[in-house]
Length: 283
Image (cartoon, rainbow, N blue to C red; front, side, top):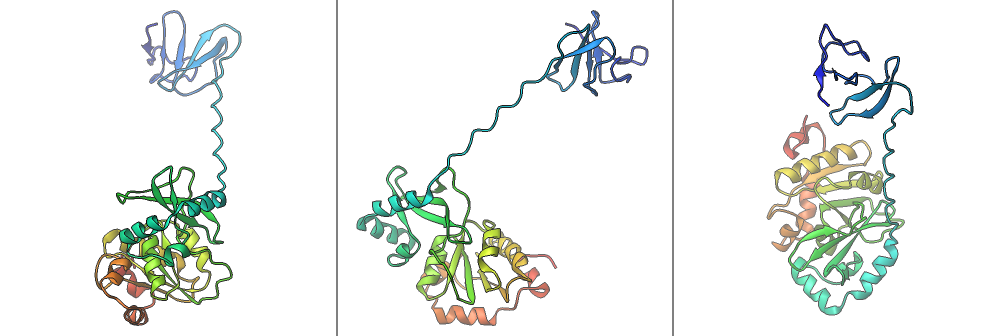
């Protein structure tokens, strides 16, 4: 079938326009503008280029095949999976993990770290603002980080219910949070420098927030974005950076004490217009 372009002298019978559309010598029409057939024609298909093809005569009008319904996502019982991962974590695996992340019991126990034999990786539960598990982050022996299929992003935190603390520190990742807990702070970890902002907001409520930003451009931008989100909701919002290393873990492993971190927090400005430029936001 050879198509000829519509022209001013031979416009498209369907839309009446002199361009884009086409016709054949035996009377078929391809209109790029309408799916409404002209009198005496019927729609027979949608063209691969986006037009609609009509032929003369009556009969059944072509209808596109309905799109297949999306496959339902499997419902995962994260609590059951978490219990299995916890039971598979041996003492030797705990010691090995402590070597990799620089913190061991009781902090790995507090955060519910387990082991997945199927993935050959440690498991880090991610929680929503109500401490319910919504996904599992994996960490392999080689340091590769991924998530179990079906996981949703959440925060890394102990199973906290009825928390009464007035201040929460927010790091990036579970190891930042565990190291801060080791020094006596109440802390949570984001799944990335921009992840789980809504969960952080709902988790914090009106508590004071101290965002411990990574010392790089993505970390600063993510911290500023979260601080903007928390401003006006939390009693206080501050953004600090480690004085040594890239992140909170590096800073603490370099020798930072709780007292030194407290001095940095207390001397930091409240987040606002004066601090947005410094932390990567816009005034």
